[in-house]
Image 1: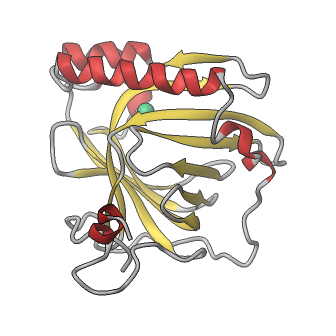
Image 2: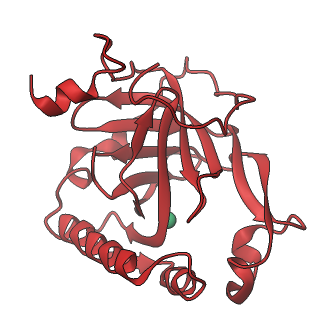
Length: 231
Ligand code: MG
């Protein structure tokens, strides 16, 4: 066993850190520059191992997301004040089709697959973020604003460059972090150019187990992350 895997064992016990398919965990994001969780999505584990964590965000899942103080969705708030006006956290059902999220340990992005409600595959979405930190109840990260859309014809484009710039202007992302994020984005784009994993892996054909219930949002969804690994 490698030191890395050894260190991944939980709490000095022999419990493996990986979650079984069907386990419900929380996929969370802390607010930028804060420890407070502002996005929490209860998801079902599809696959978990040393190479990949794959989870399913089912339609109608109750999720936590930030909204402006008056309830305005964040993306409808003008960019100039989007990151400076007060926000609160709201619980809302996940709208539309579900999302498959794929993350490789240590990688500073996760790849999300979007379908229409009739399972027509739409696109991949590369969400640049801190590498996922595992804890007993799920995984935590911090979003890095900049994203990449990847289409079935293998073309791609940057997304949310305006938010990326505004977040830097508003002091939510130091310049040196922004440089790292852009470099990570470039690496992700190179992965697209070579059609590497996960794009080549056929996940578009994947479908959720119909027996999986829609996860509930636990009352303590914003509890602090504790020991790494599976509960
Ligand atoms: Mg993002």
